[in-house]
Image (cartoon, rainbow, N blue to C red):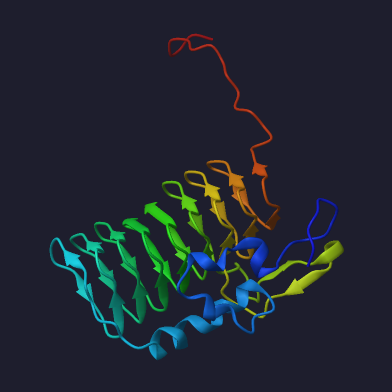
Length: 239
């Protein structure tokens, strides 16, 4: 699909992601839409030749079956990796990071304190550093989540996630669980919530505390429309 600001959306893989910034570009082979990669993560993790675990653990951690970890990666105390998972080189998994099934993490990535990641792909230098939930997502090269940002992956009615197609025609992704696609160099502000099926174009930004749903084109900023009310502070009991 092409891209502009007049009802045409951009869901081409190359429009969102630089495939040279991941060792796992083969995941996208045969995919028409970038979210289709989410269905392939589990089999990919299990089928890849196991390169072993070359991390440094700074305390007690739990590592499940079929987990690969690259050289220079640091696991802080309390890290849990259920597996299967592939974790790249020179990453930092901070205190109590929780990686559930089917996680593919690139090089130089950060998964922070009390963050939960499930069935997701991180390109190189992607970062979820503080109290984040990342479910069924792709984070592009150098994508960053502010503290407390949550990428929700399940609709309240439990049905399939739909996205906006060309000229406003709804498009069924075929996925019951689908969080967000964050293009390269995106930035999601603190405590923002991205609703299921959100797609954020390259170099775009979502402001803190915003609840976002849908497609945000490249090089855009999603802001709050209303400003907070400011009043004079008076002692209690004074009208």
